Every structure is written in structure tokens, then in C-alpha cells.
Image (cartoon, rainbow, N blue to C red; front, side, top):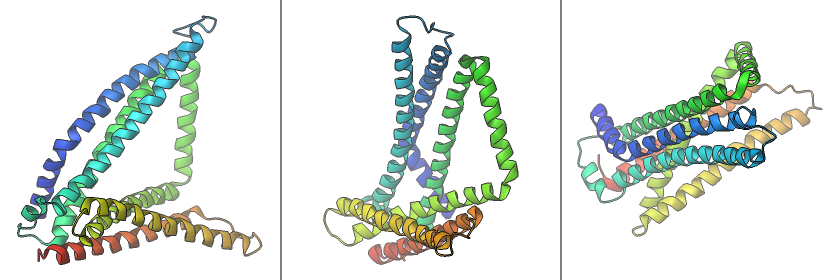
Amino acid sequence: MLVKLFRHDFRAQSRMQIPVLIAIAAAAVLGFLNMIFLAGTGSGRLVSEEANSYGLLLGAAISGTFLIFLALGIAMTVMAVLIFVRFYRSMVTDEAYLTFTLPVTAGQLIGAKFLSSMLWFLIGGAALTIAGGLMYTGAVLAGGEDFREAMTALWQDLFEMIAESPLTVFLLILCTVAAAVRWYFQITGAILFGASVVRKNKALAAVGMVFAVNFVVNLVTSFFPSLGLFALVFGFGGSYDFDMNIWLLVQTGISAILAAVFWWMSVRIAKKSVNIE
């Protein structure tokens, strides 16, 4: 049943997300052309630096680059908002009456939505990565030999850094994944909690609770680790050496615990509010 729920939710979200992916693809093509123009202008290959229009064209290219990156960021934000809008509609609005008639548990229902949402986040991330790669390709093609040599050196330094600290890179990825999972359940839990405490204006209550919960949780997760680090560094005469791996492990653990708490809260609210079990 979990697989069926996942397929249904993925298809339902695709009707909203595919136009966003098309917008990302269009922005990527424009970004590719703009980076060719920017790199070519900056290197003097398209327009001579002595030309009267050089400054104007270079400024236009830089502005275009900023707008493309802004558009890509907005597209990813819209994708995230649509995911939570879909969650709200299927769990809180009149559509929930149909959702909760299914012979499933609250855990299966929320779990399927989580898997579907994570897959769409991965698709969106892949789309942004391809868009960035396309823009990078445009810059390399038009940037000239000096630019290509600089980029080659940069990539070599990056790979050497990764090779020297594979554990740190792994823990960084693990911490990022844990934070993403925590962030998802933090928002969905806040949506369900906000909508469950009022009879009217459920959407407004859900949005307000999301902001309130995010503010409190982000404050706690940033303040106490920073306070502990400050105490370790300055409380012992500055003799403590900061260990990035330990810090990443602590952050991963905090995110995992909070994700479990918000998951449990979401399931309990769903069961209590609509009695689907």
C-alpha cells in the first residue's frame, strides 16, 4: 500500500512540478547563452575593451547572470512551496476526507508523502545541477584559454581537498541529508499542528505555525551548538582544537532527533484529528 500511495502522490505532484521543471530548463538555456555572452565580453573576445559599448554590454551580461540565478532560486522555492501546498490540501482541506477513507495507517500516508517529496527535491536538485553545468559550459566555451586554465586548477584543488578529507565530506553530506529530512517534517508537523488547533482560517494558522516553529527550532539548533563551541574554545584557555567531524556528528544527531520528534508528532496529530486508525 505504501508503494501505491507513493505513486499516487508522485503523479499528483507532477501536475504542478513539471511546469516548474520546464521553467528551469528554459532558464538554463538562457543562462547558457548569457554565460557565453558574459565570458566572451569579459575576455574581450566578443567586444573589444576599447569599444564605447563595452561597459554597457558587460553590465548587461552581469545583470543577466544575476537574473538567471535569481530565476533558478525562485523556481526551486516554488517547487518546495508546491510540495507543502499539496501536503496541506491532501491532509487538511476537503480533499482530506477522500484521503482518509483509504485503508492505510497514518504512518504509511505521511511516509508516502515524504518519499514522494524527497524524490521531487532530488529531481529539482538534479535540474539545477544540470542548469549550472550548462551555464558553466557556456562560460568555458567563451572564456578563453586563461579562464579554462583557472577553472582546471580550481577543480584540481577541490578534488585534492576531497581526497584529503573523505570522512569530513561524508559527514557533511550526511548532515545535509539529516537537516533536509528534519526540515521537511518540521514544516509538515507545524502545518498539521497549526491546522488542528483552529476551526476556521486553517491555512493562516498552518502558515503562522510553520513560521513560529521554524523560528524556535532554528534558534535552538543554532544557539546551543554555538554556545557549546564558545565554551570549549574560550572556557579552557583557548586550548581546544575545533574538530569539524565532531561538530558535524553533533549537528546530524540533533537533526535526526528532531526529525523523529516531528515525524511522531505528525502521525499522532493525523490519527487524533481525523481518526483514520
